[in-house]
Image (tube, rainbow, N blue to C red; front, side, top):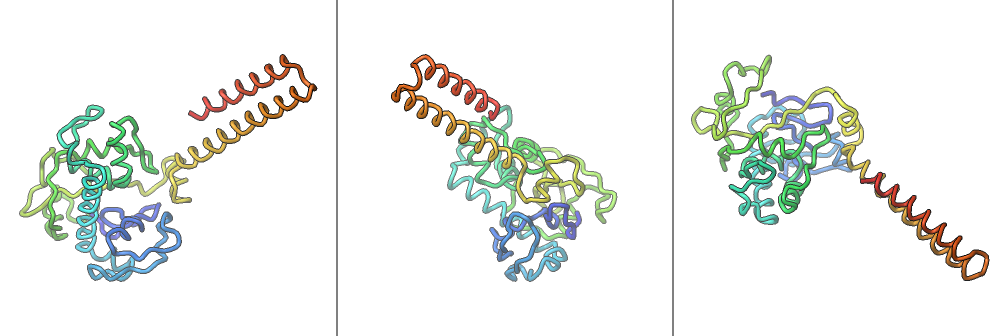
Length: 271
């Protein structure tokens, strides 16, 4: 309930917006480092926001921005990935609801959620803090989503008792389907980000702007490419040696099989 918060990874405000998400909804013009959340670019003036300080001081603008962002996420999920056809079905024991999909898109992006749906739920991608897509999909399932942004005053009125200042607030899960109470209030989807690095993955993401898993995938791909290139080199060189009469067929076969075994071991380690 604190609109002025910026966490250790540079995500800002009530809903922990990053540069890319604010750019998507037209508040931020972008800069040369869109994954670092260093906020060196300019703001567009939409909703009256002309600076990061102005954004943090304007909770009503933040709520309007997140409402627009969630609507945009749903439009992408429905239009590009046919998400409406998945509603009411169950994947990996989780009932698919509109609010759950939107929450998961808030965490990882609509594209990642859409690809997860198309895979039949066979994967479970996570953010830089290690929070998996399925956690948000389940935690925020079954909420009503309003098309009109409530005011910050309405949001605070709908908040559990004791959260009037943001200090000492202890989060308690509301029942599914609840709008949180209060006139015109809706259940907005708020991620819970840590303000301290509790893992190497979290620190790596804060320092580079990229999840540690992406670096691992890149290194694994490079290692696999190198192993396959080496095997191809061995096969070609041994074949030329055999044709040139400098190796017997037994020597050629043994060296090629050895290269295949080594390459297979490397590829298995990359899985």
